Length: 224
Image (tube, rainbow, N blue to C red; front, side):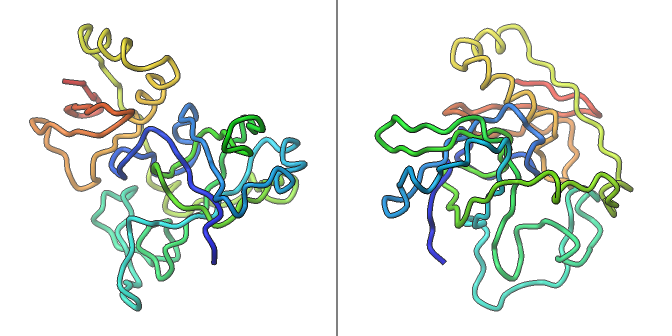
C-alpha cells in the first residue's frame, strides 16, 4: 500500500495521546497529502461530510515480520489482564493498522499544500502516515444498540485536573485557548501507563513544544 498523507499536530510522541479518537475533541490536527495525491479533485464532495475514517499505520509500534502475540494487556483493564488481540485496539497487531473516526472541521483549498484537511479528535501522533480516507456514514455505521464488551464492564472516571496559578499563567502565554483546552482534555484521560500508580512520581509529556509535568493522587492530577 502507498502512504497518501501524514497528520500533523502538537503531539510529537505517543505518550500523552488519547487512547481512542474523540476522547479529546478539542485536539486539532492537519492532514497533508503526499505530492502524488495532492489533488483538489480527490476531495471534491468531502465537504458534505461531518466525520471521516482514517486508515493509518502504527508507525512507532513496528515489530519484526511474524513477531506477534495472540494476547495483549488492554490499559482499560489496568494492564494486568490478557485478552485476545482481535478483541482489543492494541497497536501490537499482526499488521500495524489503525482505524480512527475524526471530525472534519474544514478543508483548506488555498494553502501551498492544498488540499489539506483540518480534523479534530484524532488519536494519531504527529507525522503518522495515513493510507486512506473515507467518509463516515451515520446511517449505516452508527449502532447505538451495540455491545461494548470489556470496555463497558470497566467504567472509567476522568481525573480532576489542577493547574496552579503560576503554571496556568505561563501556559496561557505559550498556548492558545484551544491548545490549553486540549491539554486539559488529555490530562483528564490519565496518560500514565495503566500499571503505574505512584502518587510521588512526576510524569511528563511533550505537547506543543512544551514539557508538561504532573503528579496523580487518586483521581486528582496536578501540574508541577
